[in-house]
Amino acid sequence: MGLAVPVPADSEPTKARRSTPPAGGPRLSKLMELSATSGLERAIGTNVATFAGDFEELVRLYRPKVFRFALASLRDLDAAESVTQDCFLRAYQASGSFRQDCSLQTWLMQIAVNLIRDQIRSRRFQFWRRARLTAKPVDAAGHALADGACSPEDQALLNERVAAIWEAAGQLPERQRTVFLLRFVEDMDLLEIACATGMKEGTVKTHLFRALRAVRERLGGTA
Amino acid sequence: MHLSSEQMSECILGPAGSDAARHLAECPACRAEFATLREAIGEFRGAVRYWSEREAQSVLVVPARTEETRSWIAAHQLAFALALATIFLLASILVPWYQHHQSAAANDAALLNQVDAQVSRTAPSSLEPLMKLVVERQQ
Image 1: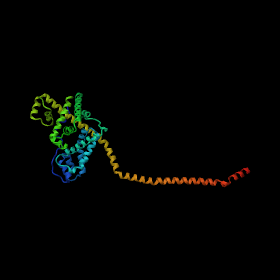
Image 2 (image 1 turned 60 degrees about the horizontal axis):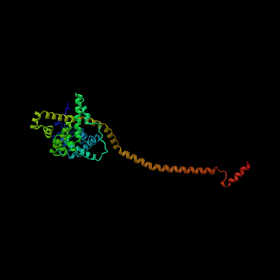
Image 3 (image 1 turned 30 degrees about the horizontal axis):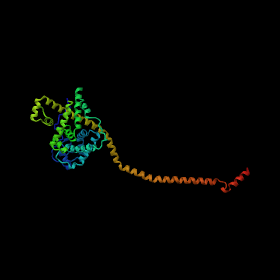
Image 4 (image 1 turned 180 degrees about the vertical axis):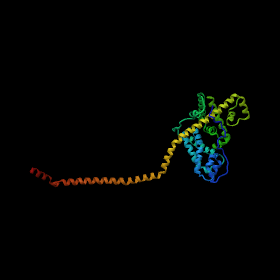
């Protein structure tokens, strides 16, 4: 039983990769050097594409990741959409200052983490605001397995586990939830999370330990 | 002695240390707990990803039209501003002119009524009593 998604592995094709700087300005060369996706590199080309056109490709590639992280963090559809748009807007505006010390994905996640933090802070003063959330991952868990042979008992157990982790993650402090989601949903390694959150690697690990303990405790009652 | 919370987390986060790996191989309880936790996290990831994709589709359908509307409005902002300015300008000219025209027509009508009244008289107002007597005698 399971969703056939293994626990963190460096499966994402977005790790930092160095290549020969292309002609086409510093923005393009940085993007080409640091974008870890071959699709983006292909789209950027060597000297034909304009930055605006390439940026559309970048948005197409990374938008789902940023949106997913924002949605899982904020649990609000409108806020997640807003954060995602702001993230790419800021990335576009700051692309000139993009340093080469992390991958493009990590850089985008860094922007998203900051925007989500701001969003959470501003929400504290918006107690009247109601989040627009049509469904939860718990509702999606069953559909994710729809094509697999899964007995009703297994289905119930799956929903129960997903619900338990969802609730546990919701009750985690902001930083713990952030590192938990970056690690276990976005498959980022500790160094990337440290870069995206501005924490030290040891701090990230501590937060992950605490988050995992909370999840284990929650699962202990259900699994 | 089972694996501590930290050891279990270490195992989940990366390759287990030699002691933890040996213990997992020997202890069915810890092995089962490790497997359950790893499986549950994998299920959670799958569910979140599926859910996010589904929600993204619902978001992408609605704003497409909104963005189109916004961009159309943005593209025609100058035209809107010019049209509004023209309306205000015409209104500021036409409204006073219409009001003036209306009052002039009213004055003309009053004057015409007065002239009609004067013209319809057969004798000056001071001779009207005498005219009445003449009419009565003729009858």
